[in-house]
Amino acid sequence: MADTYCPDCKRPTEVVFDHSAGDTVCSECGLVLEAHSIDETSEWRTFANESTDNDPVRVGGPSNPLLADGGLSTVISKPTGASGDFLTTSLGRWQNRGSNPDRSLIQAFKTIATMSDRLGLVATIKDRANEIYKKVEDQKPLRGRNQDAILAACLYIACRQEDKPRTVKEICSVANGATKKEIGRAKEYIVKQLEVELGQSMEMGTIHAGDFLRRFCSHLGMNNQAVKAAQEAVQKSEELDIRRSPISIAAAIIYIITQLSEDKKLLKDISLSTGVAEGTIRNSYKDLYPYAARIIPSWYAKEDDLKNLCSP
Image (cartoon, rainbow, N blue to C red; front, top):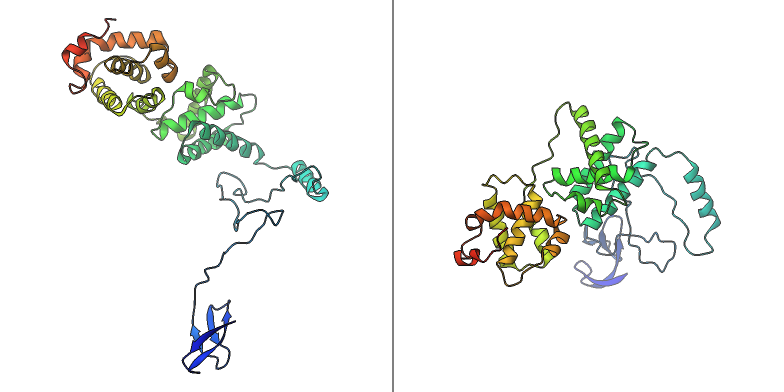
């Protein structure tokens, strides 16, 4: 209780706060001095095992519609420390023995989340990969297939569908040992299964060289002016009939831009940053070289500068 001025009593009196109604009431005359007040104190309780832990958790995790129980089932955590609680250990053991239809799904979603975090992907891509995996698993069991390759392929397809494509080499780097060939086969299998379910061809989005360019330039530490020139060159190259993969074109344009700048990059460094073989970059450069004056911005390099480019 605290003293507050009461207009009826004409003096400061002790007041009582009714938490259930949010009312502040004078203890002498019963006048409601304030109604429906907002409680600004903390709204959570501590559910940690130890009172010293800072655990302001007041709700559970978000629901997951892809799981049978919505992801809201109770999971008994493992005890911390060497001398763990015997009851907690026993309950956890019995829970693991029980049949959980979503156990494999939960593990797959965790793996996809780990791969997404390592690639720095947004949550929408991770969620799309989870949906793709769930559809494939519901349609046909995945026993006997390389699980890591299947999950990596789901992530690759999700990136394509969300217009944030990643190269197969980038996906392979976080695929827990799955090879490019295995991921490619898994991707074909998933696309085939989803097309059977949809009854039509599955749209995966078109890959453009510009989708990879900024990321590759960042890996090489190129300055903003060079990145802008490379982006303009990529846009102009789409008007040409260059029958090379978008990744190869992006790598070749980066090679041209860096050769025209003071901060030149070695072909080996570009190959490591883009994942494109040096021979492939040379061949793409050979195809782009005749159009250099057409695709390179005039504000970045003059005709005399273009003449200094090495002949393929």
